View 1 (cartoon, rainbow, N blue to C red):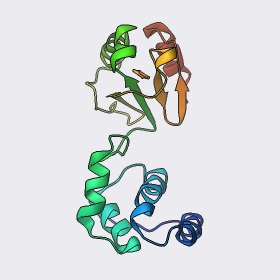
View 2 (cartoon, rainbow, N blue to C red; view 1 turned 90 degrees about the vertical axis):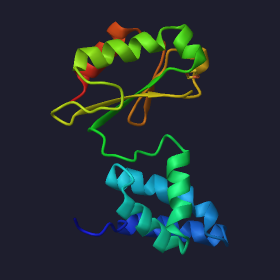
View 3 (cartoon, rainbow, N blue to C red; view 1 turned 180 degrees about the vertical axis):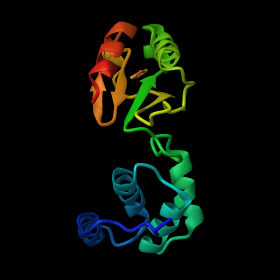
View 4 (tube, helix red, strand yellow; view 1 turned 90 degrees about the horizontal axis):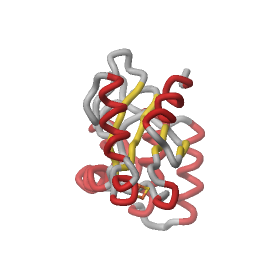
Length: 158
Ligand code: FES
C-alpha cells in the first residue's frame, strides 16, 4: 500500500490552521477529519502520517482516534449509515430502525454490504434528540425516521 499523503488542499488548510494554533495538539482533530475525508477511514498508516505531520507521538494520535467513535478505524462503504440508538432515539424506535435496516441488508451492526456500498453502524447521540429517531448518512442528517422512511432513503442512494 502506498504511503498516505494529504492532498495539496488539505496541506494548505493545515498550514493555515498552524498559524492560529502555536502548538500541535489542537490540530489533531482537524487533521484527523481531513484524513477521514480524504482516505475514508483512519488506518494505522494514516495515524503515523498525521503524527509525523504534527510532530506528535503516534500513541497520542491513536488515543484521539480511538476515543472518538466518529472516526472510522476500519474501511466503510460508500454510504455510512449511522443510526442513533441513544435514549431519545431508542424511545422512538432507534433500536428497531437499526435492527430492521441490518436485517434488510443482511449485515450486522458495524458491517458493510458485500458490494461495499453501505455500512450500518449503531451510534451514540447525534445531537438531534428533538427529532428522534435520527440517522446520519455520510454528512447528512435524516430525522423523525421510521424503518419504511429509512428504507426509501437507502433505495434512493446511488
Ligand atoms: S439520542 Fe438520538 S440524537 Fe440524541
